[in-house]
Every structure is written in C-alpha cells, then in structure tokens.
Image 1: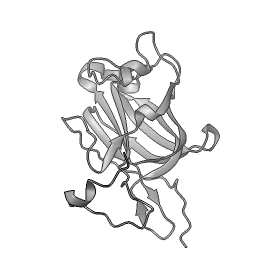
Image 2: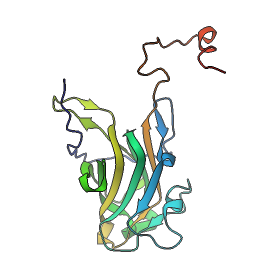
Image 3: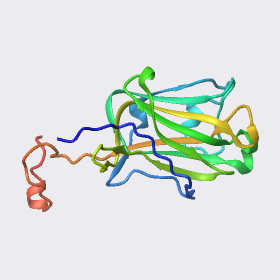
Image 4: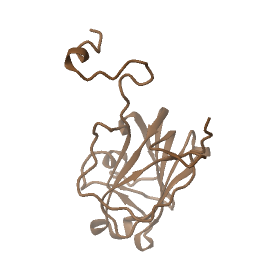
Amino acid sequence: MHIENPFLSAIQPQFIPQNNPPQPNQQRKEIGDQAIWTLSSAKIGNGVDQLRDDNLNTFWQSDGTQPHYIIIQFLKKMRVQELAVYLDFKQDESYTPNKLSIRAGTNIQDMKEVLYIELKEPYGWFVFQLKTKLLNGQEKPYVSTINIQVVVLQNQHSGKDTHIRQVRIFGPREKQNQGLSFPDFKMPEITQYASIR
C-alpha cells in the first residue's frame, strides 16, 4: 500500500507557450463547466464570463489588492490533470501575471500549493500539468480535489491589478468500463451492443 501526499510542491522554472488553444481529446476533457467559478475581485464587465468565453480579446481584470485569485470549485472530488491560461504581455503589459501559484484542496482552508510558476513577459497559451507525487517517488498524472485556486502573486513590472484572458481546466477522460471486469472491446460487431436502449 502506498501512502500519498498529494500536495507536494513542484517548481518548474520554464514553460513554453502554445499558439493554439488546448482542446479536449481522447485523453482529456474540459471540466470547467462542472465547476463554480469565483474571483477575488473584478472590474464591471471583466469577470468570470469574459474569462470563459473563448474570446482572446476579453479578459478578467481584478479590482483590489494582491494577491488576486480564481477559485474553481467542483461539487464533488474531481481528477484535474491540466490547467491552461492565455496571457498576453503585448497588450496587457504590467497587468500580466509574473508569478502564479496553483493550489488544490478539499476546502478553502486546506489549500496546498501544487505548482509554482514564474513567467517572463508571457504571450500565448500556457498549459500547466498538475500531478500527485506519491511518497515512493512515483507520480499520478492528476490531482484529486474539490477546489483549485489560481493565485496571482505578482504581475510583470510590479503592476497592481491583473489581466488573465482565458482559463481552461482539464481532467482525464475516463474509460466507459473503468472499474468493471469487462474487456475493452473495440470491434464494431461487439461495441454496437455496449449500451442499453
């Protein structure tokens, strides 16, 4: 039996931006619509709706003191594999985050940092892998949590408020027969009977 400590911090100093937005695929699904999104503060017209509208010209703008944060709260424990953010230093300049902390926990009081990020003048999509480190040194490619918190610790050039243009959150795609002892059939002659009508 392995004992887990799921919230050991991981520091990854360099992240490479992507030009194309991360999409759901056979390994992952977007789970942000299954959550309640809360912001530390927001200017009128620059809130959660703009953060999730798939439009790179809109953004969340904080309106308060640092640290600024996004809380993503699920109704049940979820496996969270990746968090993707779109940042644009070219347009947002000192509003662009420089230091981020991604935290996870079962409630707001027990949040632990799972990833610390430093970015220099970021532009594009940044996809952050969230992993659970086991005490035996192995890793699971996800964290099991109810809450994810994205904390903006500092902005570029010590800016006060922050802009984040888009956020997507992904979980691993579960197999249909996971947990059951059925074989994983792939032939159409067999899969046509996979569901009850």
